[in-house]
Every structure is written in structure tokens, then in C-alpha cells.
Image (cartoon, rainbow, N blue to C red; front, side, top):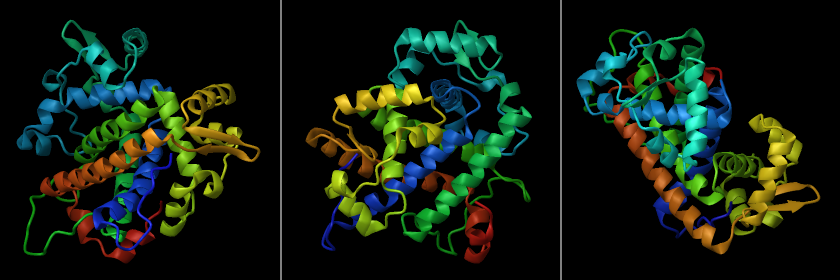
Length: 324
């Protein structure tokens, strides 16, 4: 998925920063997908899109945001906004019937409630121990992402004289706030790859392929890869790619063939390489810039809500010492 980041010191600072942030964001997104794999990956994306839509009224009200910040404070069902199946399908570029069938199956399992006004995720599901374990893991992965971004100076640190409100009393972690913000960010990030690949499985395959092709590369190596991915990338075997995403070998093979047909993947003896047509490269450049904006907005919002207070207060050494 090459897009040609700047290769010289005179390139605009924002563009260079966007390409430093892009691989961090890619790893963050794919790790979140893996953390949330309670279900089929398309079902997981549907579930996330429904949650984001349900919580839109809460996100517009700062008082509600803080009232439902703590782990044991799930937003009650009467405050959740149901969303139409058609709206969810369109947000993920899924056929309506595919979304309807999958939502009906999740509703039958008790994970969703379908009403004449639309579908929502009940508060009882959000409070289950297994779901809460996922919530805490996503909160900690967001903390690591924040540290990575601070290391490349992608997000500003607030001045000491600029106090922010506390997100939650005492030592309570504002995990509901961070998880809601993360869910919104994921929906924004996945839209671009969905547009390129045409479906959710292909989009995730393309993202994971790109991650594995460029794993371990420094900035200079990343720039060299983007200029000539077929020469610089580290090819990935289909089996390795399947295991990384927990897809079957046949699903991975079939969607890789689809990506090849779109000009987004090349097959070599050593494995698969993510690439792009000239038209797609321009789209990817734009997506990298939009991602930087989304990342900065994500943490600006969290800072405004006081959700970064504890992370900002922790000494760098303490953050580095925490387990991944």
C-alpha cells in the first residue's frame, strides 16, 4: 500500500509527521481488532459501528460523558440511540442483506436488541466480565499508542499552567471515555481501506499485509519501501498472514487474489507484498494526512475531558516499565 511519503528534509513537516504516525496507527488499529475478537471480524465491525451510533447522544453532553466514565457506569438502555440496519450497513459498505442477516444472528445470541426504531447494544452486554476485560485491554493499548505518539511529538503536552477537569474521581480509570473515543476512531480509520479494498475482510488483509511488509523498518526504511515496495518490502507468506488475522487459509487466499486484481497486492515467490496503483497512491497520501488529523483530534478530545491526566502525570520511566 505505497503512497510515497516525503524522502527529503525539506518536505513539509506535517507530511513527514503523517508518515511517522501512519505505521503507529496501523499497528494500533490492528491490535484493537485482535483484542476485540470475541466474534467474526465482520460481526466485530458491525458491533463497533452500532455501539458508536448508540452513544452519539452521550458524546454530545459533557455531563453525561463524565457521569458514565467509570468501569461500572454503563450508559442505560433508555439513553442509547438505536440505529437503523441500513445506516450501519452503509457505514461499513456492506450489502444491506449481509448486515441484516449478521445483526439478526447476533440479536438471537443476545448481543444486540432489535426494535422498530433500530438496533442497539444493551447495557447488560457492555457490563459482562468478558466484555469488560476487552475494555481494559483497549484502554491500556491506547496508553501505549499515546506514548508512541509522544515519542515522535505527534501530540502536544499541555502546559503546566493549563489545568484540565478530572475525568473521574480518585483513582478510577476513565475507561468508558477512552473506549468510546477509540471506537469512534476505529470507524474513521477503517473507512479508507474499505473504500480501497471493497469489503471488510479485504481491507483488514491489506492493512495487516502492509504492517507485516514494513515491520521493523525505521523512518528511512519506510520511505524507501514507499518509493519501491516491490524491491524494499518484506514479503509475507499467506499462512503467516492468515494466522496474524485469525482467518482461514482459504479466506486469506481468496481475498488476496481479489486484492491482486485491484492492483493492491503483488505475489512473489517469497510471499505477498502490499502495493498500489498510481490512482490509489494519491488516495493513500490523503488518508495518511486525514489519519494524523483524526489522531490529534482523538487526543485533544481526551485531554479536554481530562482522560489523559494520569498518563501525563506518570514519569516517562514508569510508562516505559509497564508491560505491553
